[in-house]
Structures are given as C-alpha cells and as structure tokens.
Length: 597
Ligand SMILES: Cc1cc2nc3c(=O)[nH]c(=O)nc-3n(C[C@H](O)[C@H](O)[C@H](O)COP(=O)(O)OP(=O)(O)OC[C@H]3O[C@@H](n4cnc5c(N)ncnc54)[C@H](O)[C@@H]3O)c2cc1C
Image (tube, rainbow, N blue to C red; front, side, top):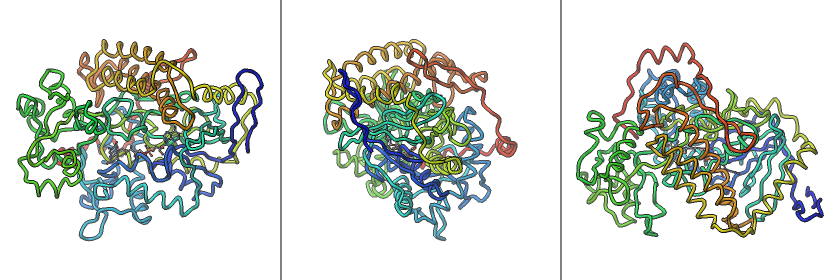
C-alpha cells in the first residue's frame, strides 16, 4: 500500500510505502533470527525480519571463539548455576541475576537444539559437542565451530528461518520507532536500494539491532555496524537504557599506521587471544615484558580488562610504539606451529608483509563490546508496551564485564524468551493512531527528505570520525572527571557539526552514515554521562581518579530521554541471585585464567 503526498505547502510529506505486520524483527543476526523462528513455531503469522544487509550477512558472522552452555562434555561437574555464578563474578555483580540465570538455564537445551538443526560444531573423538576453556570460566563450557562459530550459528538459523518461509527484507534501515512513549505502534525506515520510505504498522517490534562498540575510533566491529542504532531508537521511543558506561576493550586490536592506506582498514581489528594463549608475549617500546609489573602470576593470560589497562598505561606513560600500541611477540615459536595453531592470524599478517614467526606485531586495546543497552524486563520487553530488545541490543546479562562466549548465548536464549512472551499476545498488526501520523510520522519523513541532498559545511565522514575520535579520547579505557567533562563539551561541538552536514541522495552511503551519526551521538552521550556519574572503578569501567570499587555503587545507571533533548539518569539497585546461584557463588569455583581460547 502507498500513502500519497498529503501536503501541498513548502514541505510536502514524501510518499511512503505502508506495510502491515504482526511482529517486526529489526535485525537479522543470531538474536533476530532466533526470535523469528520461535514466533513462527508458536504459530504467529506475519512475522517480518529485516536488516541493513543481505540475509545471513550480520555482525554475528564475525564471532569466532564460541558460545557458552553448561553441557559438561568434559567437565560433568559443571552446571547452569556455576555458569551463572561465573557470569556474575565477571560482571562484578551489577548484572541482573534473573537474566543471567535465564541464559545459563536455557543454554544446554539451546546448544543441543542447534546441533539437531545441523550446526557445524567441533566434536570430541566420541562425536560429542566439544567444549573449551574461555577466559575466566570455571570449566570447559564454550562450544565452538572451529574458528567460525558465529558464521556457523547464523547459517544454521538462517536455514531454519528459510525452511519455515519466514519473510526477510534485505537492506532496509529503520530510522525511528512509532511510539507515544507508552505503547509501540510501528517503525519507520527506508529501502537502502530504492530509496523508498516505508512505514511498518505493527504493535510489536523486536529490536535485535546489535550494540554500540563501534562508536569508538578503534574497534573490532564491522564497518557501519554496532553504531548504537538499537539503544538510540529505543530511548527515542521512550524506553530506558542501562549500564552504557561499561564498554569492554579487548587488549589486542591491531595498532597500525592510520596514514597508510594499506594498513588503515585494519586499525583495531581483533588479534585473537589465542596468540597469547599459544605463548605470545607483550613488550613495550623499551623491550620490557611489562606484564611482570601488573600481573606477575597470570602475565599475558590475565583477564581482558587487566591486560588492556596495562597496555593503555604503558602507552600513556610514553612506553608505547609509534602507532600507539605495544609489541605482541610469538616469534619464539616456529612458523609451522604458528601456521597450524593460528592459521587466520598468520595468513592475515603474511598478506600485510609481516611474518609472525620472525617479528612481533603491534597491538593496542580496541573497543569490542558494549555491555549496556536497552533496559528490559525478564522477557526482553522495555517500558514501552510492545517494544522488545534482545541480543547485543539489550542490557542486563553482562554487568560490568562480559564473559567471552556469553553474547552468542544471550542472542539465542533471549530470542526464545522474547518469542515465547510475544506469541500469545499478538493479534494482528494494530493501528497507528492518526494523531501520531501528524505529530510524528509525517514530520519524520519530512526530516529524512530534508536530510537527503542537503548542503552543509561538513562531509558526513568527517563528522562520523569526529564522534569516534572524541569517544576514544574522552570515554576510553582510562577515564577521569576532567576528560569526561571535556568529552561532553566535544559532544556538543560535534552535534553542531552534525546539524551542518553535506549529505547525498537517499541511496547514498553518506545518507546512511548521516543517520548513523545521530545514533552514535546518543550512545556516546550515554557512555560519557554514565562514566562520569559512576565514581568508582568496576569491571571494564576504570576511573583513574576513583581506582577502587565502591560497594555503594553496586547499582545500575539508567538513562531516559530528557524533555528538552539529551538524556537524564537515575540509578537502580541490583537484585539478589537465587539461592541455587548464591550457593554456587559461595562454593567459590576457581576461575581458570590459564587458557583463553
Ligand atoms: C570480532 C568479534 C568477535 C566476537 N566473538 C565472539 C565469540 O566468540 N563469542 C561470543 O559469544 N560473542 C562474540 N562476539 C560478540 C557477538 O558476535 C555479538 O554480540 C553477537 O553476534 C550479536 O548478535 P546480535 O544478533 O545481537 O546482533 P548482530 O549480529 O550485530 O545483528 C544486528 C542486526 O541488526 C541490523 N541492524 C542494525 N541496525 C539496524 C537498523 N537501524 N535498521 C535495520 N537493521 C539494523 C543489522 O543489519 C543486523 O542484521 C564477538 C564480537 C566481535 C566484534
């Protein structure tokens, strides 16, 4: 159906397509795909999944290492309560225990289900799903498919969705949710191929749009993903965000000469922890194996946040390399060993003219994962009726730091939980109230039309990079009050630049990036405000002016849209874990740092 232009004054409302759906799933990574399958299996007709890319092409494909679930393949003493206890420990006890327990309880069944659906797991000699150690876990709990776990997971889910004929719309970007602040009524977007504007009439939206780690200059995400679309869309619609200040910096991203066009695209890309797991050593520019000073027992194999902070400290004290990193050296191993154990890494550096068997590579911390996101209840529903957020878009499971392998777990577990919750409630697409057509929908289409082909003083790429720069500089790994306040000032300056951008047509890349800039600014504001308010250090959040953990801060910071623009905050206490998980915590299972991947 198409709604014709209705205005004849200076700013006509552009024509837009209308699509009626019972449930719209925004995002087709593991979380969105799994939610759609659950909805279909529970008899919901008329589910539509969409994403900014082709079907099967989502950030999930970049996950390599594995997915957690207490199957006990090698360690039968493992169970879901210990998985939950490890998750709370690593999250420094600001995770929501109920959500943690939901994921930990679900996962053994979810892993077996994926097996039945044909996931290409690595197996033991007996044909069982193999499981390996991952950092900070008490037992071997991480199932994997070689070093392509995310790819295999998404392929499996996409195949299941296609078997069920669940409709998928490729290359559609959602730019706004239709909400009166209490109730969800739809979503607005545009077709990135044709430039056509679209209104989705629906009473239920599942936001599975990924995270916000790419608001930082150096990051491990794919380009143009993880820009904070999910959190920004949700908070604009009247939902709350939570824990946005907790950003996991992976210790070893590639540190490169950013002026060199051959190397620049590799900036921040992950150098797998397995390099350290296989014996890689870290040296500063003075040739010191500096982990001796920070973690003499665990050395390079300590937890991600400890190693990342040590590297950042070395660089900030002038012992870094020219490219702002340190050296990671595994040249004491021979080429055959490295090629066999670290094939993808070896090949990547070989292609760039570096032989890891002969020389070190340069690494620096890189933004990897935002633990925060949209605040939801135990079923994944936000404060806005009918708006759900799952997967990396939601907050609550990871607290102040994420256990490796838990994010893929969260995607499938919460896909199922949200699907179960939504299915009995869905009753057709619902109606968009006329008042919202005039007050919200038409003005938004006018805004989109005005953004396209607009003249302005700044190239969109310049503004995009400016956001990433101030976020990296002011809300990075080492934070303090002065720098965070300066970051908020920089945010205001960049907002002004963003209001004066030169943007191409609706189908141009600059149009997509211009919309991304808006989402990134919201996510960056939340990170800065949360980091400033949290006057302690906890997990991945490190304040150099408050280096200790403060028990009175065992609270979550929540963010809401302010009436006059920007965000306001308040804090909430954290709930207690169940007795079963409390017992597992008291048993004090030893966290095993000796093998990372
Ligand atoms: C390098 C790397 C390695 C990792 N390895 C692991 C690992 O080994 N184990 C683990 O557990 N986790 C790992 N993670 C994290 C894990 O990959 C992600 O958390 C997880 O895949 C997120 O899945 P998702 O379905 O929530 O979102 P995504 O896979 O990010 O999918 C988001 C979807 O939303 C769509 N979308 C976004 N914005 C919009 C919009 N505005 N309109 C329409 N569609 C939109 C996208 O097109 C996409 O389809 C890794 C992350 C990185 C960066």
